[in-house]
Length: 287
Image (cartoon, rainbow, N blue to C red; front, side):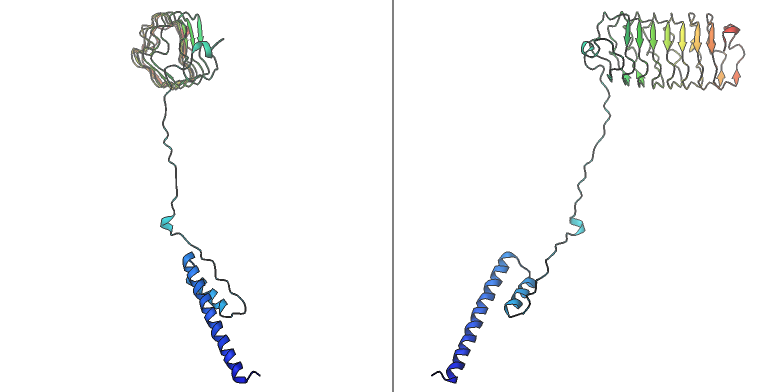
């Protein structure tokens, strides 16, 4: 028969055994949490659970916040560089099987046949620069169209090989000036059309090498004055169009054009004309 004393001893032994087992479990959990990097708060919460908390508590999840100094914003810097178009691009045979007008070339085609005649039309192509060498060996072309591009510069001597050229069309571009040698070599040129550009001044020597020039259209530009000698002794010139510019004054040495029959100065801001300026021009020629 089990006595009360034996019951007490068994109860005490059970309690001791329970405490030992609990301590071992706690120790194992502690070791496991240390190995997995758990925080002390999580360890305390789990320990409380093992010690008989009726409702298990869940430790809050740790949130790691990076300091502002550790946040790096990566940005890509793009360096824009302006690349000038080449002297020429592609080949004439592949780009211009029929004609070169409105082909989106960007630069004159290479290998233009030297036998090409009579017309080369490079209009509406987005041309920006006409570099030296672009028109080499074109000795038989008589008509050259460069209208409706974006030309802002024509290199000196670019037309020197075009000794047969009679008509040059440069209208509707972005030219602000032409160097003294831009038209050199064009001894057969009779017509120069440079209307609708942004020309501000003409080099005094620009037209001096054009002995055959009879028609000159500089209308719709930004000319404010005519330098002395610019339009002097062009003895073959019969038609001169200077309308829609910003001319305010005509100097006495602005013109010496004995063959001129048409002179259009309309839509300017001319307020003064020096004495003798127009004496070499027939009164019926002036508009």
